[in-house]
Image (cartoon, rainbow, N blue to C red; front, side, top):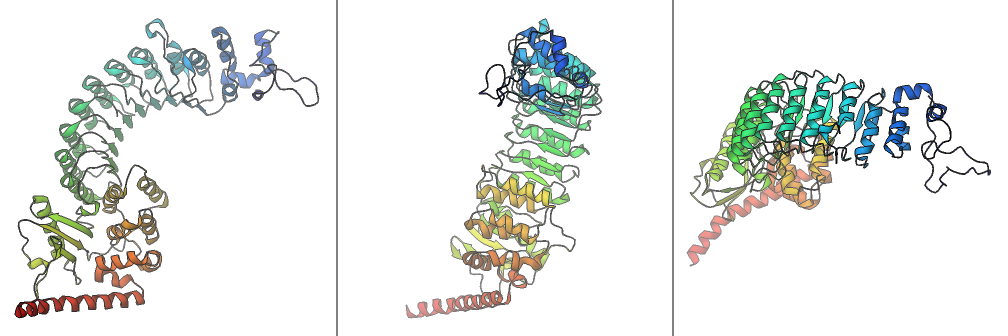
Length: 570
């Protein structure tokens, strides 16, 4: 097909660019007036096939009727599959011309018109959005339509809703940020109930309350095609989430975004009830919903029976170590949740202090005056009893800042913790990765790296995230080093401790990790991981560790004698 001439350079005269040889060039047909008949003039510019497939003549005539200048770049893209006009200031008049030609266009499959004020100043009741409705109803090729942030309002969305039900091609629709409210949500849900093609619906940021949530719940029950629903940034609260949950249980939707809806603990419990019963929901976003420990624990209990969920986002919820710890243990039951979002999760403990029964290695601090602190210590003692490791699992144990003296012939299992005090220790699991352990695919690992590299997270938050990820995944030594290197130097040993028993190829530890650690980090790793390091270290490093341990034993044996000598001399 004959394509339109390229847009004139900004410095060219109004009649079009001048030829270098001094001869005149035919003026740009969309930027200058013509003396010939409009239809004959258009036919001379565009081939019959191009005009038939794109509707360019419809667009040009609509622009003339409305008194606006046709956009040359838009004409040039009329036969493309994707038309992206996001943030272009199309406006209400430009939207009329645009949708009139979209109505007959047979090429464009993806149309992005986000943030163009298409509905600003239009009276929907007087037919102000009929051009949008007609295009949606009549276009047979448009599959993806983004109308986000276009001031359509409740009435505008209500007027285009019948067309949504008639569309036989539309698969993905965004009406985000159009202030549709409950009335608009009801109209949209009613129209789409019988639609057999729409798989994705975004109605986020639309001031939808519990009444609108009921309409969306009805849609979930009626729709046989819908796979994704985004209702984030609304005002559902606990009541609206409860209504929506009733529809989710009976739907086949796979992805739901409920972030920023102030659901609280009660709403979290409603979501937990869905997770207990749903066999299709795979991705769930509950970020920024004021979910405290009791809500997190309800979700954790549901995860212990759910095997369908693959991604759970809980960013920015005010949980403590109690709720976060229960979630961590629950994720490890089936290990089916592969993507977990815990940024800005208010655990209020050192990031490596969360206990994971599948990966208990790390550095821990326990307040023995509190139930969570005592439970943390007892959980490690139980893990130590079950593993029955030949190496000492508890290292560098200190009570109130002083090394803990257990006495001759006694170990940590024989010690009775006091009712108060701060206990600090390193725990090293004797459990090695199974032979079938496999590292994640490169694309999955890159996604994790991008998430951990978030500029909104410090080392502490990223260590929490890594602790959650490591409960269900193993890594190659080269991947582990990438993760270690992505943290500050001060956190390198913390990361190593989390990943130490999650290495799918531990034989590569010496060359891929140990050789790259700074001397100070090696010394700290030797102190915190002890004899468990021996099988993976080069021979010279093993000798150095052995000599260091001999010196430490001699010093420990000398301490009782020194105390006795001091007592006798006094």
